[in-house]
Length: 125
Length: 118
Image (cartoon, rainbow over all chains, first blue to last red; front, top):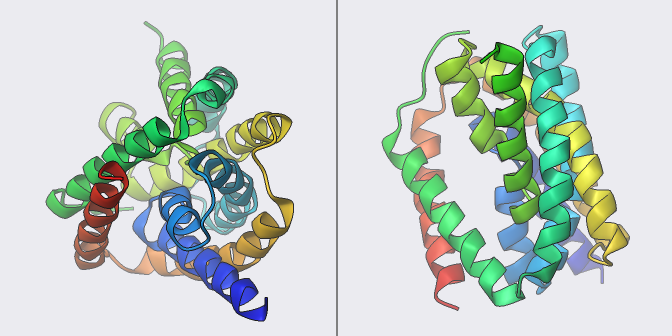
């Protein structure tokens, strides 16, 4: 029990750090960790991931707000679209079989990984 | 097309992606902001986090409504995640992290292959 609490906590810690340092969300790490290490279904892992992303993003946004890096006007219009988009897809995804969803997620992270390997990050604040 | 409309459509794509895969959607938004809206990489990253908050709240409610949430696991993961994000965000402003990205990219490809082959 204590071990599993520790495993879960450390998974979260790593995901949060990677999120801040690499500019990728915690979800891309959290979902595979939950599926492979915690043994959850793909749907459950994605649901939990989204919930965990809320405080993580809030915390990250708070620090970057202090660095004056958030462009709020841009964020507003993106958020309007994003909320509409996720209402559509979060409902749709419940009808997708778990295996197909896991494969889709796998393809997504393969592309993300390749992109990270071959793209040089743009410099400059 | 106005800039507001283009941003909203970009957000729509990111939102669909986010709900479908249970991720934030920054991976879609950040390159769009850098390439088409003249934000720096760091500004785009920061801005995407601000977008992710309301988006993830919305998707979580919907996933929860469909019974795909486990609150104790989420709270425990989040506790680690908040601490990690605070450390990470501070570090992000200071380091370029190119090398780290490459290593992490390889790891992702391997995990992805494992998920596809199941």
